Image 1 (cartoon, rainbow, N blue to C red):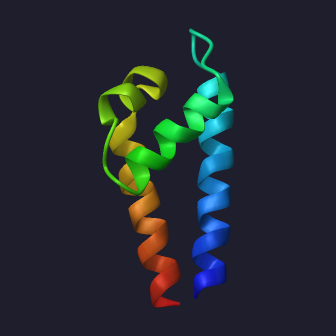
Image 2 (image 1 turned 120 degrees about the vertical axis):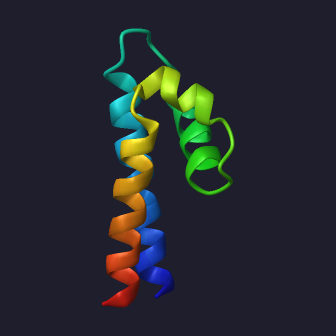
Length: 73
């Protein structure tokens, strides 16, 4: 269970860094990772995530659905 959660966190952080790099304004990878972790785990910095990605709610819902599916497996 913990391995799946750790793997999912690594995948989410990798996606966060990749998606942050695709934005119109360049964001440092460390900052993007910090914002992603704060948003996904602590539900903070959602306004910064929206500014960087522009689709915070879609990402949150998709990650929540994936997490729930993996937990129930």
